[in-house]
Amino acid sequence: LNVISGTSTSNLIRTQVGDRYVLEQMLAQNCNVGGEASGHIILSDYNTTGDGFVAALQLLSVVRKLDRPVSEVCRRFEPLPQILKNVRYASGKPLDNPSVQSVIAAQEGRLNGHGRLLIRASGTEPVIRVMGEGDDRELVEDAVDIDRLRALARRLQPRDEADAIRSGFAPTRTGAALVRRILPSAIRFVLPSRTMTDAIFLAFQAASGDNHPVHYDVEYCRRHGMPRMLAHGFQVLIQDGGE
Amino acid sequence: MTGRRSFRILVEESLKGLLEQSSKFLHPVFVGDTLYPALEVDELTANRTTGVVGLRSTVHNQAQA
Image 1 (cartoon, one colour):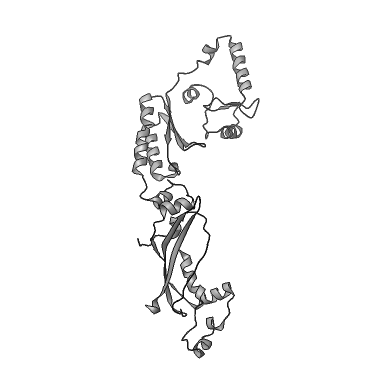
Image 2: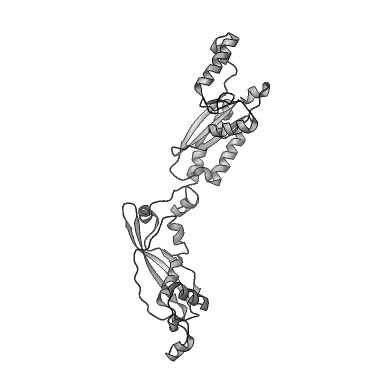
């Protein structure tokens, strides 16, 4: 299409994959022919969605007008190499990973403007679809070299489960899986220290409703042999809630 | 294992609920004291979809050292 639009009076606009994006651009740019590689053709003079009957009738009317065989009418361009490969992945969102993004950018660079690379995650299965096309088959094959992507994916193996979660390679797991695989027993979490200031005493009294003078009246405490105000037991206990 | 790894990172976005707790208070804490809390995993039980994590919690007081 790039080649044809370069030699004819039509303009080519590319959109994201999906016919709602195609239609959106058609309305915005006032176009009357839109379509997708799947065969979806939108002819907005007649309908706002892809319509196989309308497309077929339009083709037949052109065939009739030219009075030539369909095989001849449709032979309008030399097919360019297009290669589609699927890369299956285990979990997570590899396309969000910056290292994966940099390899994709490098592979796009290999095409050097002589084609394009379309990489997207399937909406229905854990597969990344890698599509490359261009006028030079060898160049396209090189660009969609998924072994290179796979090698990268192997190099990117997360160090541990927590690392996997941070880098987007692992989904959030069920509590059962966390307990089985992630949390080692006897792991110790040291929390930051905290000074029990008057402000914390006050906040705890407000939150708990506890208003015994032992928690707010230092003179009361002294009369009972305590040097300073006493913290409520639960005020001490909740210091471990900050995990 | 010890370290400043966050419990919150390890349990990801799992919804957590408090099932039970018990505690012993060994010494009083006064205003101005600095407390040093820590948690240690001492129980891991996997159910079908949920899991139970037991945490042994300690709060040390610098004044009691």
